Amino acid sequence: MPLDLSSKRVVVTGGAGFLGRVVCERLRVRGCREVMIPRRGQYDLTTEAGARRVYEACRPDVVLHLAAEVGGIGANQMNPGRYFFANMAMALHLIEQARVRGLQKFVQVGTICAYPKFAPVPFKEDDLWVGYPEETNAPYGVAKKAAMVMLDGYNRQYGLKSAYVLPVNLYGPHDNFDLTTSHVIPALIRKCVEAQRTRADHIVCWGTGSASREFLYVDDAAEGIVRAAEVLEQPTPVNLGTSMEITIKDLVQLICRLTGFAATPGEWERKIRWDTSKPDGQPRRMLDTRRAKQLLGWQAQVGFEEGLKRTIEWYRGQAG
View 1 (tube, rainbow, N blue to C red):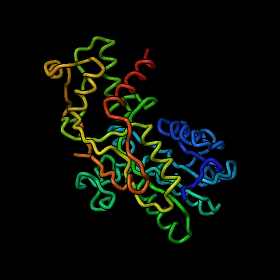
View 2: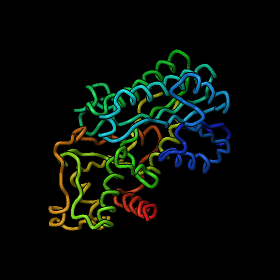
View 3: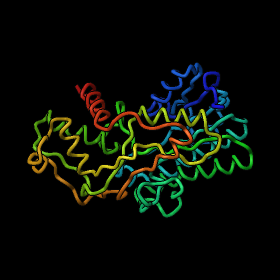
View 4: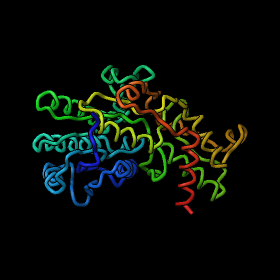
């Protein structure tokens, strides 16, 4: 039987963030009246003391661990040590305290960066261990994957019930639009909107445009995470995605068209410039999402262009 979250005390780490705020909304829609968000200023989850204090103060039945330190390719290149430590330490301490306190369910949000650089496409969960992750993502990806191994060990030795989901690249309203740390979609939207406002004649994009990615609207990801909390009891990895692959070149052209910055092939030729000294990142990303449908009864609902239009409209409203 699915776990009835309406009667549970639920802690959502990262609950004030881009994905977390939507997860909290979904929990409240399900009737969950006790949703608690530990704030970074009060609790340093990278320390044992901080994790212990969260459990003491909130007394949760269920923990959804969304908090992460992460960024785009540039941020990953600048912070490999910090990203490994912070993400590994948070999971390590929160999972151990879950064991100590007899938590009913622990849900870990993983990352698509955990997949090997040359994993067969579409990525299947059983291929998580067929090679090493793409170099710029590896410290973050390995830390997140280690949390899955820890949950598996704790499930087998201590009976800790848990779930582990791997959302593909997310996008949507309230995303991070800071060009130094953002991911590709918010960065491109901001570049196009600002270029329009300043009447710039071009934008600069990283890499060659040949790499491909898959993207998931934030609302769909939140629903998948809450569903995993309800129905899964073991950390079997589950992909959350759309199974739709798009090259970065096609993505740039699509966002240029939807924002109105450049609508035709001739304009794309003039207004998009590629900085090939910058890395492309992982060559391809596309997920096999059959396990999510089988185990969670979940599949994405928001079409890609519709999700992009909502995101662009939201950003324009914030940017004035």
